Length: 218
Image 1 (cartoon, rainbow, N blue to C red):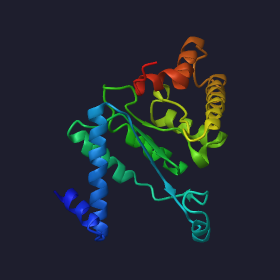
Image 2 (image 1 turned 45 degrees about the horizontal axis):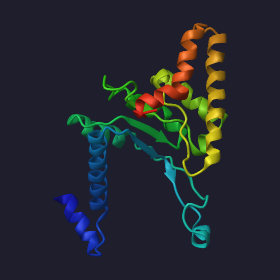
Image 3 (image 1 turned 30 degrees about the vertical axis):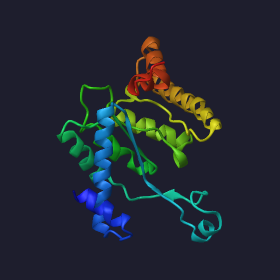
């Protein structure tokens, strides 16, 4: 009822209070999460961005024209509480967490372990490095953090920006960095030189994990 009353307030051209806005957003996110679970979809959450920072250019060119930056307001506590609220009623869907701020890698890595279960391999996982982190160092740091705190072999790999066909080239870039990193670990004695196991890990991260995780019928 509270969700409905806040929504009707805005429809009647009234401005909800800051508290009402937060309650509405929370209620909506919980509703969406439960719908993802009901439909057996994977939920992907992106955060850590501050948009449209240059007012003069915003007024000249409009929104989302390249004047965005990393936000250092990491919502790790709120994220854990959000996932817990869905978990309490057994309505937590498969979830991938992305932060634009690389300083959030470790906090995400520790959240992952709090909500795993046997319904899916790496049910809650960290998404790939994206946007300002979509480069060799950013990708490498994300992979190392995931290997340290999560399940690297269950990782679904690089995402694609569906708005740009040329973004598909980032998959090749990602795979080269992945293979180089794991090869470095093997050469340094950090992982056995078992070619069968290594090949399976690379194939899974590059293709099969995403196929299974998103339940693609291909």
